[in-house]
Length: 322
Image (cartoon, rainbow, N blue to C red; front, side, top):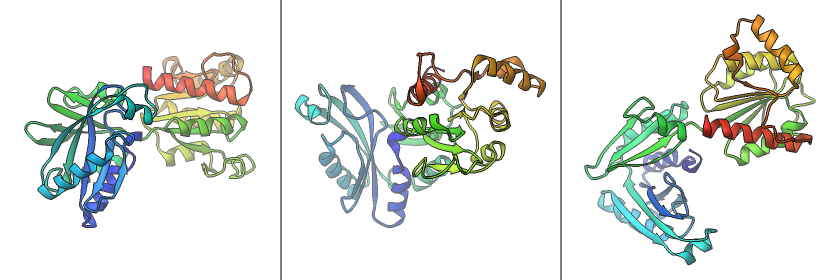
């Protein structure tokens, strides 16, 4: 979803404004292609463009084809070879080939379908946009349809025979409970890795904008904060306060949800006490076993920045390897 940015939403906006909108999507690649499958470029009838399908190698040609497709009202499947010289200019060692599906909104991509896609994205509901390219058929599907569960889990758009399957997973989120020194290193790392981080800390002195410039900070008790933010399978939760009054409500909420990762700061002795409290609260050992504690991969990390690296690595492992 990170590559998709807000392009479906912007495409709908441009169409409603009467500008015309064409979505160009990378549906297949060979070799060292500049952009991954699912990357998109949005083009208006006025030649405005957002996004990228090639990092600059073939954008101009795609814009021309998109404007012609908008006028003709038909879809186009384009194929481009990216030379080694062009690839080197955008930071790759060698070139490759890409296929780009060009779809005008309205006459090819139905407005009602785009609206449904945008609504699902806004509601953080995973949805796939499926195109039977030769037949020109289009529909939306969920993780339980057509054996798509693995694609959703791997966040992997791509071709399946003559079908292009575009995966639209909700954006990744990381909720960090405790605006402590480790969080000051972890939050920017999370953002660089494609997460939307949220800090939760009811203590104004900790959760101050001066300490976390420009970040979203929720000054509320963790149970209320997490209920308001919402927890789902695209969310990671990390507790860093060392204070059971703050950590335990967040842990309880996370264990009762589908979050893909829950990590808690603290020594083995601290975690043993945590396990005892959670057992008394009615959680089974299997449920408690979802907690990663002590938090982070065991890489001998020292200091806030290295601990943040270990946490980020473990979260990535949990996301990609399950």
